Amino acid sequence: MAQGNGFPHLKLLLRGSFRAKFSGGMGKNLEVQQNKKDRASHIGKLRSSLQRIGELFQVEIERRQREGLPAVDAGMGFVMKIPEGADPDEFAHALGVELVAETDTGFMLVATEDLTFQKLDEVLAKFAANERGGGAAASLLEVFESPNDPHRIERLLAPDVLQRWPFKDDQEYVFDVSIQNAEGTRSFKIERIARRKAKNESDESFHKRKDETIQKAFAKADDQWTSEAENRFTKFAELVDFYGARRF
Image (cartoon, rainbow, N blue to C red; front, side):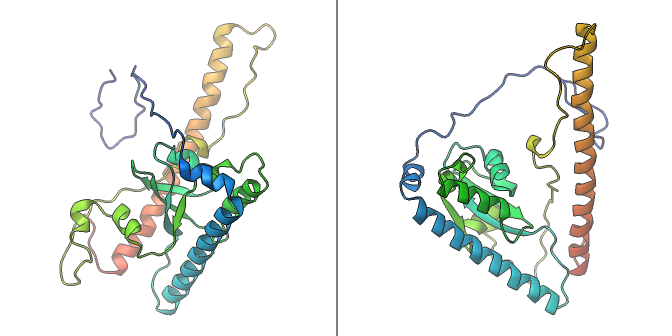
């Protein structure tokens, strides 16, 4: 087992041997099968919801500008429903959105800065034409467009916090906040590595070269994620300070 470190404020790689755990997978889903049978209806429903989300978010952007409120650069957040057992990270990557949180019951809280949903629309177009790359559309069971939809509130707030919703203006609340700064292992690329050794290259040198290439990619990605985390924290701090809240 990997040993703990005495410097919890530092990011250290966790090394050790562990037993892999795999989920049971998505399995058959009647809703997915129905969506494949009636592609036009399913696509129409999703596009209508996405258009409505974009319109609502544009209205919110203009309202904040008009009232002199700070911009929310994190983009618009909304809830998707996928089949239970499906991989949320895989779906988020395929649909071009950022995964913020997920539940065991198939609900995903996602965010995007792209009001046109370009990547998602490409997936829908491929699904309509029954082309490769459009399969994720069939498993996108529903998109909850309203910011006040109960499904969205229930997935945003922990049960004990949900009991206190809506919050009272004259009462203080204390929350722990975490910053999402990495989109997962699919958000960076590793330079292509030849499958075979170079001429006169030893096994040790070949494996070392591969390891160094992978580590370099991880290091580059980590720098990007750290920079993004710092940027998001700065934006979050601006919001907190604007509304007169305190940071501990």
